[in-house]
Image 1 (cartoon, rainbow, N blue to C red):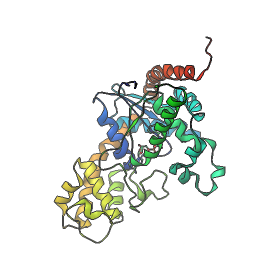
Image 2 (image 1 turned 180 degrees about the horizontal axis):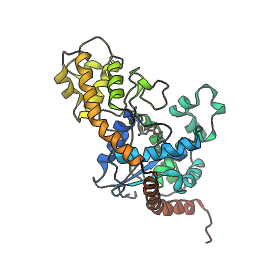
Image 3 (image 1 turned 45 degrees about the vertical axis):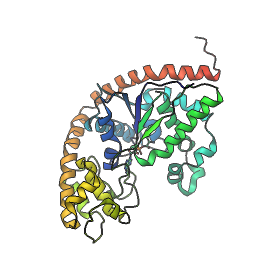
Image 4 (image 1 turned 90 degrees about the horizontal axis):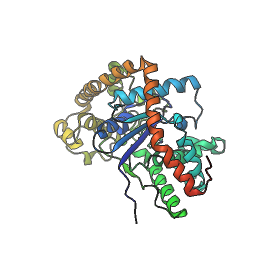
Length: 339
Ligand code: TYM
């Protein structure tokens, strides 16, 4: 017998640096689009995840508020969605501990993000960095979320979330946690670096020219696109033909995501043309799409007290959902509750 869970969407973003076009197209834009489609939407600035690598406390506070501003600037409406920062809802850390007893150490060592972030000296990384996916599973399952919109790079963590839910249900003979569906959709689920089409665009890349930041002004955006690495060939008529041209494919995918078109529709217009024609068109499109977002981010950021108020209110609403689920989890596991 399988319990049917009420559809609910959960997702999160780390405040561990400025957000990029990859975060916008792979996540934030989708978060806004999913509002009002039926399921309740719960969105979180995951500050407890950010500290798995050292963060300067003042910078972390500023980046947490900036991330909240970015959610709202991208169209996440705190009246339609629940928007909060993770550390204000203790259920996340509490459920993560319970899941640390369900998840296996070997599962954690297999995570490619752990291998990438821990690098060669993995024995010296924080224990939190290794246990990170257990906290991520807790984020999702504390809300019994049924669907999680993310970029391609989070797929492995979502598979692990499913493994944890299934093992918990099996070990305790219950059908309590849902098996969450990943929502990895659209043409921009993996936006690549502007300097190297085989690496993902990332806020932690040392080269600022590799990414478009949501705080970049029009000139910076245009310049980064103009200087983006490409090749000398003209554009073909279909995305299939760009299979071995990762930089070209990336720019076409970005164009398609920003314009809300398919890559083939974009290429139908640019077939036979070179990057001398394509890049200025892409730059114009990117500036038109991002300038209003940057402007709104700056407006929200000018009033940090209002951001804090919104995050606090979101945390209260989040807590009201997560608390009973965590209490029930503890009861299932045999914890005595006497008050
Ligand atoms: P984070 O903070 O690295 O990224 C936030 C979201 O942005 C997506 N993303 C991208 N999408 C397309 N192209 C890119 N270049 C790109 N870079 C980032 C990510 O896939 C993600 O959706 N562990 C998560 C945060 C997290 C979470 C959660 C997500 C914590 N708990 C629960 C979902 C549900 C992370 O580090 O994302």
